[in-house]
Length: 174
Image (cartoon, rainbow, N blue to C red; front, side, top):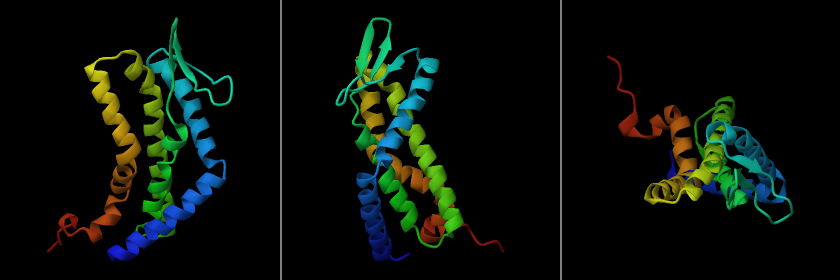
């Protein structure tokens, strides 16, 4: 794999997808789906109910009894993590379009699940303030916002990346 070709392909794909992402309602749809999934999963896992925002600019709230936790997450920033993930899959050389689309489907689903988990865990990490929740929240935030696209891409496309990574090549069978 030529590093320059991969980098150029990634940057072109990233620019094109980011342009589409910012000019279409894709990010809003992703965020709304994430909130809808979290509203179902949250009460089943920890008993907090997700209350929708009542006006523009207001954040949703997690509610449990009299306790309320404002869901102060920048959903557009969380959702835009999908852009580098898609760009990595599109820039990966040597795979068929069917396989690439399968990777994209799996990758976006995994990213969506991780983002939804961040939203679901939010009230636990914010309401119960202690060292454990501080460290856990920071770690989850870093992984979710920074590492997830690369980790998911590498995991999903590993079999295809092996040919470009000599250390991971399968040994020849004699």
